[in-house]
Image (cartoon, rainbow, N blue to C red; front, side, top):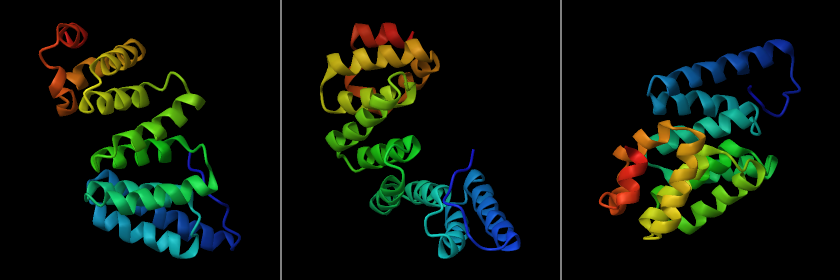
Length: 176
């Protein structure tokens, strides 16, 4: 469901903004982040607090490797909605890409305080632990994410974040 701060203009203006947002989203889904950003910027010029335009612009910036800029947008969303799970997760992932694993884990912990069985968050926290050399914690979290969603076993088998665990018997058992 799209959520945003309601625009106070006319129905025609609101429809035009929604159309611009949907065009941006279509570009994002097709893997055209620059084009997506163009349309999200059009939406944000009229509705600066449009939650989904902010989040999706952040995602598009992340696709371009502009993690610091993406984090700024996620933080804007979190000022509006402090428990916005998508923004917390994406901020954590951007921090992870910047090598700021402890800060990423803080984002993940907030999500887990809201949704303790959020498998995607548990998985990414396991990734952060693995990279930091906290193997027992990483394996425990990975096991937990796989129990919730078995698809994470296959994902972990290809994820470079788990390179330090490749030869661990427990890791091998989890991904088998």
